[in-house]
Each structure stands twice: as structure tokens, then as C-alpha cells.
Image 1 (cartoon, one colour):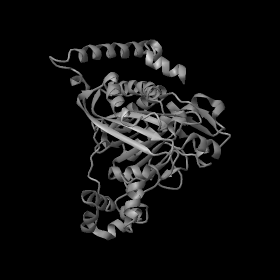
Image 2: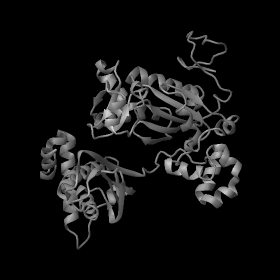
Image 3: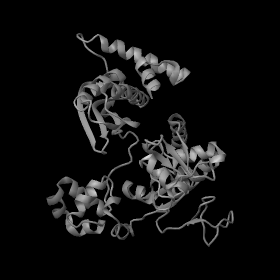
Image 4: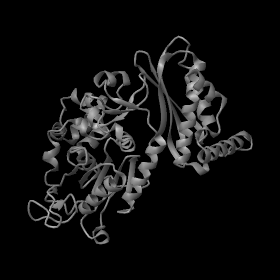
Length: 419
């Protein structure tokens, strides 16, 4: 048993060193080393910290009435508000909520600070997003003078003391169970799933608990009577493979608490994207293009910040009836250029924007990443790409020094004026 206040070992109901009562008690707490750290309602918590007048109120971070909820605080969640929910629905559930537009740069900076704190415990930190990451603390006992669980308790308390933000931690023997554990006791939770109880813990849980199983996947499994993780285990590996191929075999392994994935600090990001929901439905192709351009700039900036170039471009549209359309195209070479992203996305858009169909959302993204240093070099027949790459790099440098408004394109200004 470890004290949640000072991380010391506890022999009784209270910590003998500091007298505090909260205790982390688990038979395997001293031997497990794979952790998942997740910041609690990250964007909303930062807004409440920075503006104390928001503290007693439900807070929603997101766009206008036609937008969606990026995240919300736990008070808003008590009314049924959830991430990715349409804003109009969220405000109907919780009309007294305070809506904050949000500041992604501020959130990214805060995420980097917390990540550096994590890296003081171990170099084996694998970010999943700006507010969550896996950690492997194997072999750190001598360095930090205690079990990984004790180091994680100290980290959790340090983040609160220095950043005034709470995080929840899951500790287990693999990534799947560590991430599952971090969701069990939010906010500021610390949960452990050990080897001894893993199978029994998983058996009654919904198949949606498994990583990679979304609503469509869960529905496909349920059509074959597989509603609980225990159902997958009972089906056996052969039937799961017969029904779903390699995916079925993978799900069976997870049902047995078997997840061989290592914590990889250099794990590749799957995609970088940006999207927006319109205040009113849009059918005009020129208007859609004007909205598309700043999204392409945003994706290019995020790729440049991550030092990665994308080979596959994805265009996303959602029409007035909420039908989602996705188009993909592989580029001739990886890119970080907003211009190239835009030109390709515009070609894809032309196939669906007929001037009659009304759309409520547009998005663009890149995937299949490689090192940005080798991207957008052009060749003997393409002298324009290196020039454009140099120009966009100069624009990015100016914006980084003087702010986003330092250099603006005519198309972006036109879109803002019309908006």
C-alpha cells in the first residue's frame, strides 16, 4: 500500500509519515510498470484554472451553435454533455453552461510542460495526444528510490502543485489494461489492474472497451452474439478468425489480456487533420474552397511542428442530413505544404460540390508520414515546389515570431470577412 499524498509505504489505514488517509492498495502495486496518464477534461480544466470566475460553472470548450463540443468539465458531463456532441444539443442539455472558444496553442504548450514532467521519470514516454501518454517505468526503481507506482503518485501530485491540473493514472502490465485502468476513477484517479484479476475484470465488460472497437465494430460483433469481452473469449481464437480474420484473432488476444505492444517513444502519429462546422449549410463551391484553405494551412502548420510530412490526403464532408463523405488520394511525394494540400483537396472537393448539395462540415487531413526534411524537394521538371516550400517556411517563421496574424493570405481574409 502506498500513500496517495506522499507516496510512502503504508502499513495501516493511514500513512504513518504524513497521517493522510488516501491509500493506493493493490497486491501487485509494487511490481507493475506500464502506465497510462490522462489529463482530466484538459481544455476545460485549463480554462477554469486561468479564469477563476468559471470555476463554479459548467464549462464547454467548443465552437458556436453550429459547432461541436471539443471537451467539457465534469459539471457539464453530469448534464449529459459529451465531446464531439453538436453544440446546439449540448446547450439544450445544459443551457447554463459557459462556452469558451478555446486556445489550442495554450493547450499544446501546457501539454508539452506535462510531457516534460513525465520524461523526468523515464525516457519511455509515448504520447497519444497532447493530454495523454503511455509510460514504461521498468527498471526505474533504483533511480527514483521506489516502485513505479510511487514515482507516478509523486508525478500526479507534482502536476497538481505546479500546474493546478489533475490527471488520472492507470497502472498495469500492458498498454491496453493501463489505458483501461486510467478511465476507472476520474478525475484524479489512480487505478491498478494486475495479472491475477485481469481475466475476471475483462469478462463482463462491453466489447467497446477493446481498443479499435468503435460503434460500427461493436455492432458487427453484437450481430454474432459477442456483446461482452467474455463472449469473445468463449468463442475461441478459431471462430474469431473465421468470422473476422486477423482482426478477430487480435480481439481474442485482447480478451485474454494479451497485448504485446511496447511503449514506443517514437511511435508514429497516424494522422493530422483539421475540420470545421459551418454556422449555416454551404453549397457554393467557391465558399467551400474559401473555408478549406485555412484548414489546409492549419494541417500544414501542425505537420511542420511535428516534423512530419504526409503522403495520403483525406477530404471529409458532412452534408445537411449528417451523411459523412470521405475521399482519399495519395500524393506524388510526402508534403507539408499548405498549397499542395489545398490543390489536391480542392480537386477532390470538385467531385462532390455540385452547387446543389448543402454541407455542414468540411475537413482535411494527412497520413502515412515520413520525415519532413526529405519532403517537397521537387525535381528538374518542378522548380516551383522548392520555391513554395521556402516561402511557406518563411511565413511559418514570421508567424512563430510575431503571431498568426503576421502574414495573411487574401483567401483567408476573404473567408473571415464573409464569416
